[in-house]
Image (cartoon, rainbow, N blue to C red; front, side, top):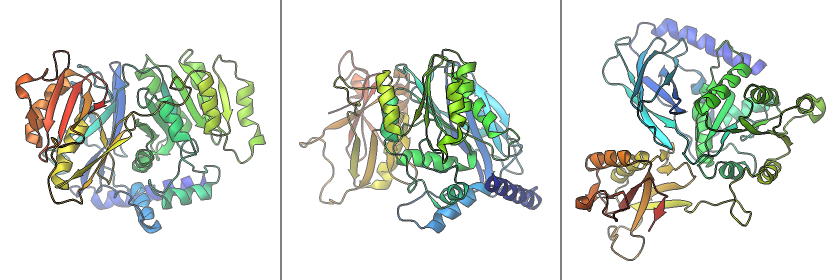
Length: 479
């Protein structure tokens, strides 16, 4: 706690000095940060922050401790912008909001058109003049939407649950936080595979809920993507907020349950802090909504009795499992039917692990594929030419070492790849925008049934001759 008080005091001092220096000046690096939202037809929550800072640099392989330290310190010494008028738009719904004293904002919207799983994209824009800043300042926001096939949801802590942190060793935790990066920090053994199986390779949604501050959002999001965890919103807390971390974590979990009334949940945490007590409260407050509670044992002194007191007082018809490692959680989850497994009893693997595209003109191809994959629900990974699907499949792009000829899809080899979108409406939008994004439509006279009367699809060709079929409402396939 002493380390946290030091960090809070440092940010208070920084904020005071910055306010005196810049109160009337136009922001030099006005930026709207969006944090991934989530929701259903019951409502959508969008969060973000407005700052006067350039974006943080992305971690790169082989960088030194100094680079990581500078990045993490910059993440805490922010120039937040209070009182900024904003308009948030998602799925036909609009809401006006003003950033608070720390630059944060949160809005709850009621969608007026159907949401698209797994991700619906909205916008956050400047809604009026702010300290001399006018004009178009817009940021996309991604809203995670559960698949109609989802059978359960996962709420997971982060520190000492998926990420080895050592919260009980405060000095070690601070050093790791400020000198490590999204590329160097490590998950617990087996936890990535466990989460993939619990989510059914992206069918069941996962929500990462932690008492860590929003200042660490970029790091946590980058870590989860780099290690190929199932994607989901990362819900954190305000470092300088007046509410205690425990109450804020309660609020985030209640929000998840309220906005996803059709799902029951598995809660996963650790014994290092207050997860057992928080989860016990959630089980009591939401009867019938929690399937199981898993607590990873990470205490320096397992004999302190704190977790055992929660277990001894447990009078709910919900399993409470204190697990030594990921394998213990897996064994129990398999016994209770929570894991998505193949008939032989082994965890279900993805049909396609990844695709590696070798292109001639990387800059041109990157823009074309970034637009198409984002439109099909894939998310760009920071700092590299890679896009990740919620089921864990990813596409990687690099410059071809062979400059003797261009790609020819009519030669022997893979002819084309087929992606999916959730609806015909989304397919129509992609078709309308494709020409402006560098793609040429194939078989346009037969749209949308060029592949057959029961097959709804769009066929596109990139500037380098790659063919992509986009199918509405069917499973991913490749030819």
